[in-house]
Length: 289
Image (cartoon, rainbow, N blue to C red):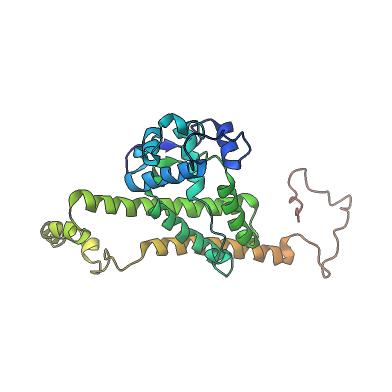
């Protein structure tokens, strides 16, 4: 994975949206039969998957397609717009509802986490793209619609639902980056993970027996082993936290003491003269529900 970073939305936003939503003027038929915008984007993704995002250029894509560079500009203005088309292409959601699990919101978010990790591992160049301000095409919105439809029953506010999705994605990005870096380290060093740590073993054994690290030296042999699924552990803890929040919201909604009048509770009377009403601003707000 290259060290450089590309930025989503760096091209002509209006033209990119036209291309994503197919609302702009279609290019006139060129001299190259079979050359389409879809094919250009597919080849760009293939190049990025194989050689990294830095290898993607209009000249390189034209070479892969066996056509002249200028012919590509009939379909897409430049690399900035092409990048956003690539992002929308690889994020195209599956049409299979089972891909988000067949259970409740928790199973849907768990499936989302695993699907997103698989996406980043399949297209590692995504980690090179700043997507803080993405251009929203049909694939991005289709995916969001699909997930929100499954987690809406959580009963959270709309900003909280969006935050839950962002939280999962942020966690997955960090995990995916670690996994990609591990593969790159093995490839660049020529050492497997086991060989790398074995090379440090003599020094580490001596350090652990020195008495300087009593807590570290007391850890079990499998503490840093490969048998523990760190990704799944972290994902489940995020979901546990959301589970607590959802449960607390539901409990509050079902609690008669939340401010809603009940059959057993008489309506509040107008304060008498010797029992003045509370000062302005001190009363509890009305329940919007």
